[in-house]
Image (cartoon, rainbow, N blue to C red):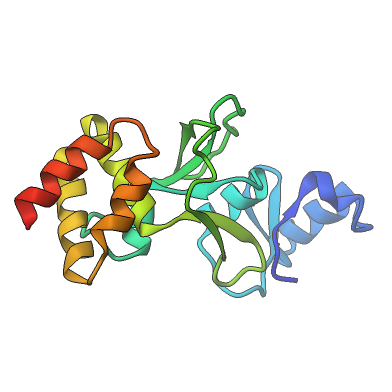
Length: 186
């Protein structure tokens, strides 16, 4: 078994809560987070990613964490940046996860899914272009350099500005700063 088991799913799987607690105590399961367990012999996986996917099926890796996934930044995120639709409940977690609320109207824009390595769970991930546009949109809290440096690396790898601007046009507060940055880097 490689997927995470939530305490709420234990009964459906034919495992009592006390059996799951005993299995964790005996070392057959690892406790990833409150109410989430994983087989101890499962392949190694990023526990924050597993917890985010287990807590919210619509969890989507974004911002600095997505830039790091695409290797577009040298910044090492201290927290896993995860977006959920605005109006959703932010799950209570003990792990290093920063939950961000993104507008429901644009939440699915350029959103894909990947399998979390070492796990059968899937988690959402924004495209590199969407991530760059979001970083420019939230530049006031993330810093101006993060977006500029990611854009520079993305362009160096052959990124298409027309595709980036098509996405930025659909997101508030990102088109203007991106146009200025593209002109400066050109």
